[in-house]
Image 1 (cartoon, one colour):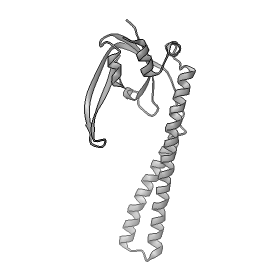
Image 2 (image 1 turned 60 degrees about the vertical axis):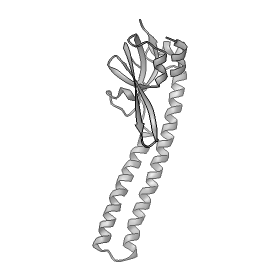
Image 3 (image 1 turned 30 degrees about the vertical axis):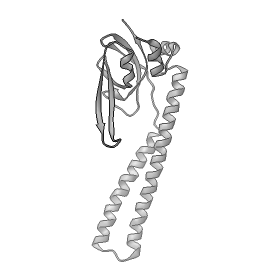
Image 4 (image 1 turned 90 degrees about the vertical axis):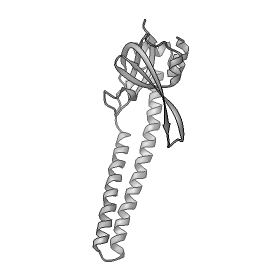
Length: 186
């Protein structure tokens, strides 16, 4: 095992690990998570504002349909159809923007046990090629990881993994967690 490589992979040092052992985030980790969260919130707000713009355009098109001529059954059906999409985009915009104001709890959790790493190759038509997906299994949890980790650890060795759950995910969705640090226990 190469501790320095694992530290580089997950961006932590021994000081961060000591703080994680106590169930807390180091100042450096807090800053990094806040920066990443800020970027995600900014893009969520931009997306939400864009959806509000689409909603306004859809509502204006309904107004134009009725102002241009007499209301007919066909125009009422079109207005209902467009109104439905306006409602959907409005609700999606509200959801996207409200997520930007949601408080996040960065509670450090620990899971310990023998590790197993699996790597599978998948094909994605959208990106037009193959990619690998690696998963770390430890203590009944799974984490999406970079495949390089497999080169730094020995399958079956016992590790302690310190992580936080990403906001908006259930307790079962540990693949949606961020690993802060990890250490060989035995």
